[in-house]
Length: 489
Image (cartoon, rainbow, N blue to C red; front, top):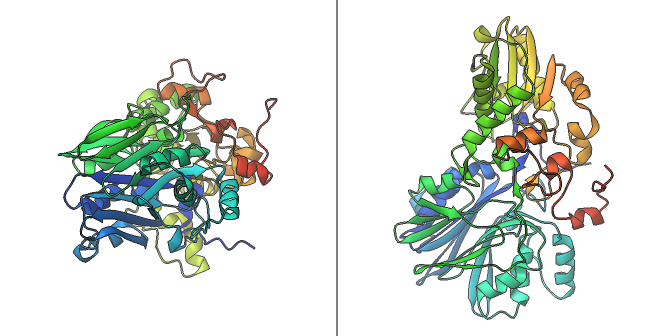
C-alpha cells in the first residue's frame, strides 16, 4: 500500500509540478532578506519546504530550513537576524528524488559541506538521472549520506575531488553527474551558478547595486529591484565575487534543449525565458490552438489561472468573446483542512466556482494548459454542465502528456498519464465533452518561435513528456525497468 500523503487539495493533484526554485545573492547588505524575497517570487516552483544559507565573517555559515511557505517562515526579524551576511543562497522545493509527499527536514536544501579549504552550500533545481549509481559507488567508498535527495551526491563528489579550490571541485563533481540541473552554490566569498550542458532547467543572472543575483526566473530579480543581465548559458559555470563575474565551461559543448514545458506552464507569465516573454508565448499558443482546432462557440473561458494567457490568445485569434466563466478562490491555501470524506469529495469546488449567469445556455470553449490524469478536467466539465452550459469543448495548450519527466518534474507513473493509454477520441469520451483537441507538437514549437515547427532530427527543446525522446538517458529508471521509447515507435 502506498504511504504517499494525499494532495493538499484535489486541484493540485492533476498538474505536473516543477520541483524547485533556486536563488542567490552576493555583495548586498542583509543578503538573507533578498534571498527570502527572491524565494517568495519563486514559490510557484515549490511549496513544500524552503531553506536559506548565508555567511558572515563573525558567525561563519548560518542556515535555516523550514517546511511550508516562505511567507510563513522567513519574514520575522527574529528569524532573519539568525542569517547575517552579504552572501546567501536559498531553495524552495517539492520532492523530486527521495520521499514523495512526505519530505523529511534532512532533505530540505541548501545542503552544506565543510571541506579542507572551507565550507560550501549548494541548492539544485532538476534531477540527476544517475544519482542511484553514484550514491551506491560513494557509499561503497565510505561516504555517509544524511538525506534521500540526489543533490547530496554533488557535495560528496566535491569532498572526494582533489581540486585546489571549491569551484574546481564543483567542476570535477558535475562532470560525473548526468541529467538536468541548475545549481546555485556559495563559499565564504563566492556565489557560483551552473547549468547542465543541455540547459534543460533555467538560471538567470541579475545586477543589484554593487552586488549580483542568480535566480531560476527573472520574476525573482524583479521583486528585489535587480536588473536582468542575461541567462546563464547551457553548460556554463559562473563564479561571482564582489569584484565581478568570471565564466567557465566545464563540459563538452552540446546543443541546447531547454524544457519546453517552462513556456507552457512552469514559469510565471511575467518572466522572460530564452529571450521570450512567457506571457506572450502562452498567448501565441492560444492563437495556434485556434488555428489548428477551431470550433463554433459563444465563449472562450480559461481554467484559472494557468489557462488564462492561452485562452486570451484563442479568443483574439477566433473572434469568440473571452469570459471569466470559472472564478478562482484566491484564498484557497494548500493547507486547507479536509477533515471528512464529504468535504474532500467537493474537490475542485473548494478552489473554483462557475460563473452561472454567464455560462447558462452557452457553448463554452474551456482552455487549460495540460491534461495529466484527467481527474480535474472531468470535475470542471461537470461543474460547467451543472451550471447549464449547452456544449463544452476542451482546448489544451500543450500536446498530450504521454511520458514521465526525469529532469526535475513530478510526473505520475506512465500508466497513470491519460495520454499514455488513450487516443484523443478515447480521452474525449472519458472526459465526456463535446470535443477535445490538443495543440500539435509542431504548433507548440511555432508558438515558441520555431517558424518551421519541430525539427525531428534536432529538436530545439526538451519535449520528452510529449515525444518520449529523452535527450539524457534516464539510466537509473532504465535500470529499474522503465522502457524508453525505441526508434521504431
